[in-house]
Length: 112
Image (cartoon, rainbow, N blue to C red):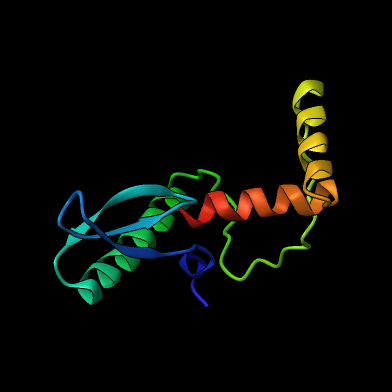
């Protein structure tokens, strides 16, 4: 396994750019573009490998990769007391637990 394999590679069509855009969220948000999805992915893999090699040569610390990471399904969220109250009341109105209500709101937001 190469060190670059630890990083998530995303290639998706961009209507705005009229082409495929490749990115690696841990290292860069964009920069690899093209009309052929497979070629963009291959170029993205190469760019990430070069990024990792350069960082190691310059003794830079790389972020932890997200590829293959397991998630527990739990995280702590800090928010203001007013927002906490508003969310609790909204959950109550819908007859849901605060946890289920917030999870549904987040899921809907990410589905857009």
